[in-house]
Image 1 (cartoon, one colour):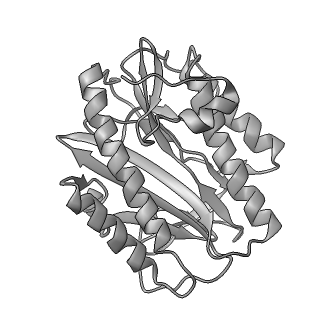
Image 2: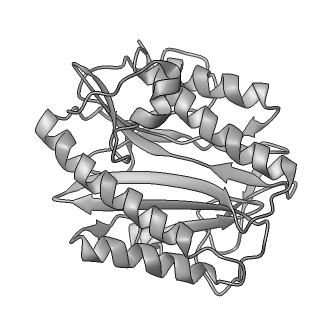
Image 3: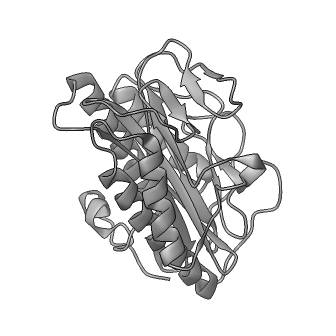
Length: 269
């Protein structure tokens, strides 16, 4: 993603954290609505209710014409699935991507999980590896010199799990817009990447598939599916970098619980 990297003040980061916690609550509500037999529209309505009650706005609804509050992708759908009357089944792999805006500042996060109480071992391993890749990338950001250090950490987990990152889809900067410079690839790339500096806010989002990394977009012009029909998972957090460390903006604890395993204590902006 071309363009100048927007650097934020700590006060601006604190507003982004307000948006991020709303996103976290909206995702929790959406996940709770994803029970066997429920339509994916129910999860969209649950997230929309949380965002509206908080006095925030959705940054997905209307984005380039997108028709819903969240993206809900099921099984071989990797990202950008549109909520519908489709009813979820036991064992479905579901990814929900959500965003909110507070006073012009954006939050963006995604979760993946398995519907019901019974998961195929390969699907459980997929979701677990995608979460671990995300947190490895976040942990790397704490000491990274360049954005490519984050990409390398994500790829290391992906490779060790025998999975593939979706070709052509990357994380991004975030702030006064949902998608901003710089790109945050989920795999190593050639060439020099931007230096990590205080004031940067990045959305790190591994999109992993069990099979081929190639994809196709359905006729709705939004839903991205794995080309070979294999299942996929997508996890994302927005993170702030400042002089004293990092803070996961889309987690109420700043990421403390998951970063502890990496020996990192997040610092509030």
